[in-house]
Length: 315
Image 1 (tube, helix red, strand yellow):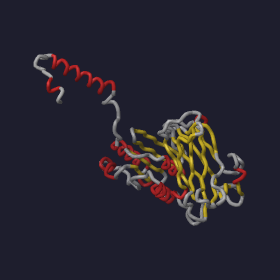
Image 2: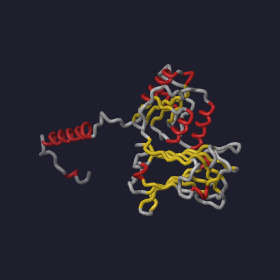
Image 3: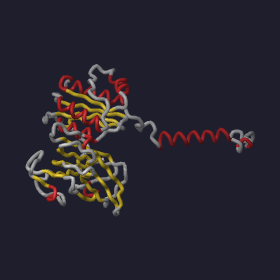
Image 4: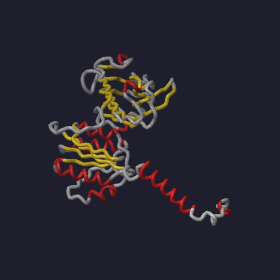
């Protein structure tokens, strides 16, 4: 302001309007055409999510459907959903942390519904949610992706036409019925298993389990891709510090480390519990990066692992 206070504009005359017009034209072109301001979705569409969920609730039967939504606050979705007579009764309003995953699983385990409708808007869509839903409702029959939002409909009915969804690029399974991962023979036991005859046994003397290793290129892992991992575990006590780990190293240097506690999904009555973990990579991943999957037994406890499944989904 001080510098330009000495600038005399009295002699510019019409030049002022010329410069002003040029600036307006330049900014308008940059905003409207170059940056596609009016054709780009900048905000998560709560109204579309509410509309689609009401539509599918009516289509698949309100008495045969269970619905959940993942939003920051119930008022965000009710502002729009209350306008539709067929709007579903939401059984859960947020699901992106361990305690909420457990709540969702318990809800679905006791539900007699034939169809599951799940929507999200302007909130983190956790990969664990889809894993839990697909255990009880394995068939995806509707999928409507929006900007930072979406609606998915799952069914128990295999006769419904399936919807297009992100492809599964890789599936790695280990039920320990045979030696698949390096060093499996050191951990396998036929004393107990969730399915089949064999499982992996961890003891207080073992800090690390057998490890699966592969390159990021071989698994299809790139920036934006999603990984999902699940397993069954059995323990006599709460596993205070047992972690399922996915790590990525580049030239012997660890660049990504994701560890999730097994006790986030607590076991009950000494029965086998199911563990879930997932993540969408925001980090840059190179094709030659080495990916490792293993269990870390930092608390040196005794427990069993079975039916490990690892998936990579396209971005």
